[in-house]
Length: 138
Image (cartoon, rainbow, N blue to C red; front, side, top):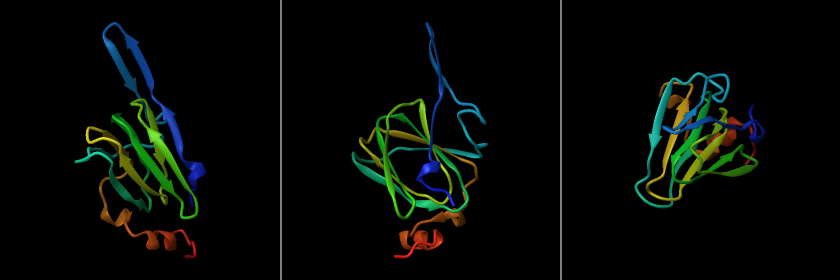
């Protein structure tokens, strides 16, 4: 079972010249898995919370495209808050960890890549069931 020690932060490569910037991430380098699904999340209001679930087997990579987002990751015993605001740093979350996001402003955009297509059965949306999944006593 994964823990907070298994979170990874990867900086994508920035190529900057007179035409502008390209920010690049490659599978097996900055991207630690082969993405099967990518989606973008934009809140309706400032300080909106989203997430609040864990995945049984799916890996996810989160990167802020615009704005600032506080990512909270929890292994059932410990929590870690990370502020993402750079469009070049990605946070990879392994399966079995609870995560939520606090979007600082309504114009924040978070990109999420997953190694699986959408499967509701992969989600754990109840925190007590999550603790049972991790074999943690109340």
